[in-house]
Amino acid sequence: MLAEGSSIRSIERTIGIHRDTVMRLGVRVGQGCQRIMDEKLRNLNCGRIEVDEVWGFIGMKQKTAMRMNQPGPDVGDIWTWVALDPETTLVPTFAIGDRTQYMANCFIEDLASRLAHRVPLSSDGLEAYQDALERAFGCEVDYGSIIKIFGHTELAEQRRYSPPEVVRVNRVAIQGMPDVDLISTSHVEKQIRNLEDKLSSLKKPN
Image 1: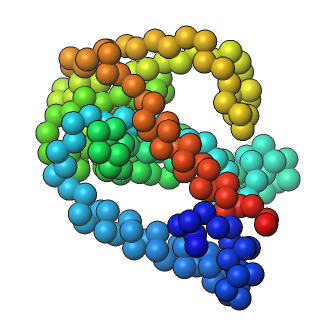
Image 2 (image 1 turned 30 degrees about the vertical axis):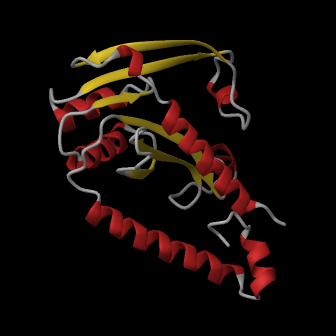
């Protein structure tokens, strides 16, 4: 029922199992999937890779946590980093944490350890990717960045639940010899939207 998008409370009502038990099962399944992923997704022959990161929060947003004097690792802003092979929709790796250079390094280093050969790689304009890619791949990557110019310039505006209007897109070859026409994050962004929709369905109080 979780896989079909049913909310945790609706599953609780339907099968008579407490919602905490349903959530614990979800955690156990996720941990098992991560172990399988770490073991099996190695030496991958990916044709291209797109990476992106999506903002969310645990319990409450960071501003609210700070205002209520409740900062800590269990509440506040959280970022999910996702890598995707757009040709197969395979997700070679992901990471969950903050949006720092350290997290970018960990995420890209794990990605590099799973690939069998040099691949073209695309990201958004986050500067942390450049240092992380140089650290993990050296010169063995064809890297390009896609920079979107939004109608809203303030970060707070860009974090609204409805995405801001994109007014211009710039594709920039940064390292190696990427095909500029193939520099894109559209596939991984679609995957992230699917993830957001799934999480939203789990949060519904119905």
